[in-house]
Length: 113
Image (cartoon, rainbow, N blue to C red; front, side):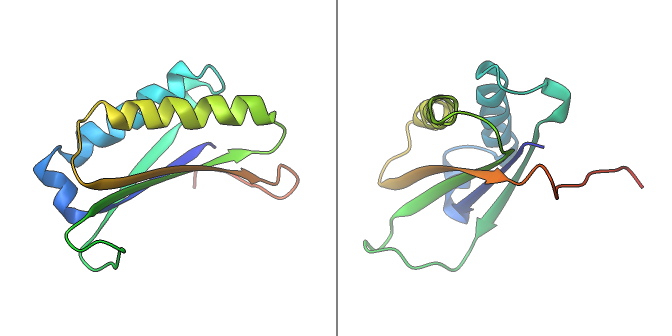
């Protein structure tokens, strides 16, 4: 934990490579100061098929799944860090959104198998 899931239109690749996008989100998570660098996981899921209100519009949505217990201010800072990182790419005609979701500490499990 935390997990950063980047969902995006596949056409985002005309602006940046998926590795660059993941690296930028990873660095924004590190810079938030909320997590140990070795705990951060980032993945990207491009979509070929999606429907938005405006035709030919791209999208990026980042969901940050973090363990519960952080304040609203800390979660807001994280959202802003990620949004600022995404804004740095200079996307055009792109709907960008970020959401921070709490995972329940009591039931979250992690192990290497």
